[in-house]
Every structure is written in C-alpha cells, then in structure tokens.
Length: 141
Length: 73
Image (cartoon, rainbow over all chains, first blue to last red; front, side, top):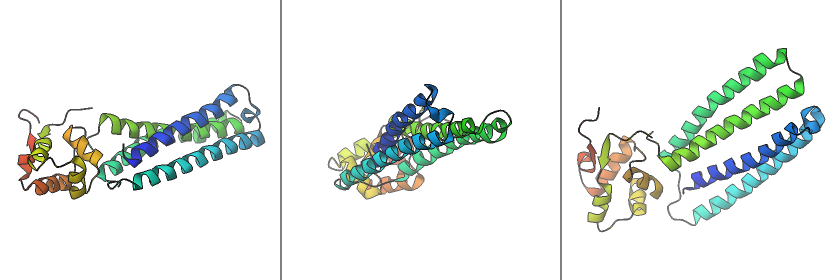
C-alpha cells in the first residue's frame, strides 16, 4: 500500500469510530441532541480527539514511508483523490440543500446543526470509501 | 470495474530487462511500485506520458508495450 492509501484507511477508520460514537450517543438520547452547548462540547471533544489521532497517525505513516526509497505521490494517487472528492461533493451538496433549504422551515436549530454535521461526515466517508475502493479494485482514470 | 480495452507486456519486458523490479521501473518512470503493479494487472490505465515513459525505458515503441485488444471499441 502507498502512503496515500494507508492514510485514507486511517482517516476512514477514525471517522467511522468517532462519528458512530457521536451520532450513536445522540440517537440514544444524549443532551447533545437537544442542547447546543452540550452538542458543542460532545462534538468538539470527539472531533478534536479524532483529529489528533489522524494527525499523529499520518505523521507516523509519513515517517515510515520516508524509510522506503520509493515513497512518493504519483498520478494514480492524485487521480484517485480527485475522484473521491468529486463524488463526495455531490453527497455534500445534497445534504446542504436539505439542511439549508428544506429543514429551516420545519426543524429546530439543534437538529439542523446535527444534520449538517451528519451530511459533512457522510460526504467525507463516501469520498474515503471511493478512494480505498479505487485502490483495492482498480480504477482506470 | 470495466475491463481495459488493451493489454500490456510490461511483466515480460521487465523479465527480458534482467528481471527489472517494479520498483526500479517505477523509479525510472516517476511513479510508485504500486502503480506499476496496478498497470501490469490491468487495474489502472496510465496517462499517455507514463505509457511513453515505460516504452522509453525498455527502448520499445508504445505498441510493443501496450496492445489494443481486437474487437474492442
């Protein structure tokens, strides 16, 4: 696996774990689902922890990759990353239309905020799944 | 994943070039070992530039490395 592929797997696993916890707690009735202050604390804590784990992991992967003489990012890595971004953009756009155009008429602010967060996380997850799948199954550009 | 309409002889050409490794070829072409492996297995269609660079490494014309499959569009 290239550095980019390993980093994509790391980000995917970290996101699934972190946001399964966050949205799982909200579904289970955590105050973050009804109170903005509680939401900011819970989301901030989980997002910050996830970010630290990913940053440390990527630094470690980069150090490991530098030990290899042929570690570099090439046209395949860039093409696969662009594909993931292009597909996740459509998910993000759809989520933002729902959150910004439809929900303000019917839903309370906290639910709009959590749905927006879910849309962002979902878009990023879809992009990462496209990336790791493209590495594993192949992609013709 | 759709099947590529062309095949390649990179594995054979590497063998004939003294068992050149995928990493060595990648270094000379400017891509990773994994990308050379993906091209060999038909999992990645390289850019025209990389295709020409691969042919150049082996001192062959492009059509000696990549062959269009008869019957493909």
